[in-house]
Length: 155
Image 1 (tube, rainbow, N blue to C red):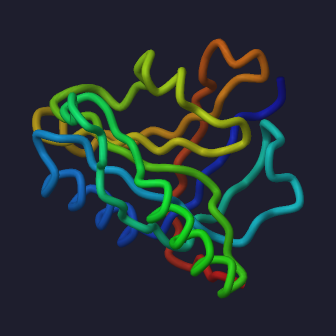
Image 2 (cartoon, rainbow, N blue to C red; image 1 turned 90 degrees about the vertical axis):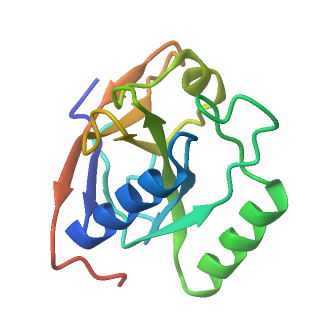
C-alpha cells in the first residue's frame, strides 16, 4: 500500500480555506487545490504541493449542509486558467459543518482516483483539517498527512 499521500500547504492557504468554510457555515464550502503536477501523481505515496486554492460555489441543489457539487463550467474555467499558468488540479477541498473532517459516504461515492481530498471542519470543531485519497479498491479512503510549509513555490 505504501506511504499515504502528503499534502503540503502554506499556513496562509490553509487559513484561507478555513475562512471560506466559516463564511459558508452552516453549508459546505468547496474548491480546488492546485499546484505543479508531480511525476508520481496518483501513487499512494505522492507528495503534493498545493500552492493555491481556488474557491468554487457549492451548487448542490439541496442538502448543502452535507453535500457539495461544483458547477462543471466554473470548474472547467478554473482548470483552464490554472493550465495557462502551468498548474494543475491536485485535489479538492470542502468543509464539514459541525462535523469531523472524515469522509462521508457521499464523499466516497463521488471521489476521483489520484486526487487529494482536504476536509476541514467548520462551526463546532472548527480547525480540524485532514487529507484523504481514494483507496485502490475505491471502497474507502486512506488518510494522508497535511504538512504546513512557508516556502512552497509554484515552480
